Length: 147
Image (cartoon, rainbow, N blue to C red; front, top):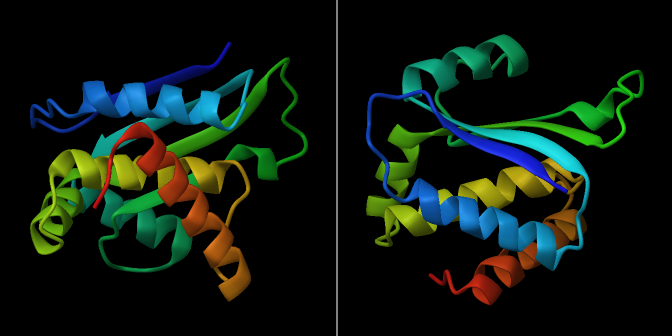
């Protein structure tokens, strides 16, 4: 059994979040991931900038930040506690407009991107980036969210 929540901490009504929840459930099944717990938290630019500055020492907005708790070996639970994914709704809206696709597509991309980070994927090195981005594309395409 997987446990995850999508928490909207903004004052915006975001109808796409119901579909994002279904996508995340699909992604977990697609990757045969079981017994995990995590949150996706929707925030605004001001809050994500504060988080980015506090935890990454970068004083600017970003679209998504993931905090992988499995990086801390002293946390022991009967299931995997993956961590939290923070997504800026302001950045998501702007990027959807910039890339000329739907807000659903952008929130889906950011959610899967964050989830893959929680699962240990990264894109710092070119070979890791290809693996992670191919996995993102595979999940989104399989669900029917295409560019």
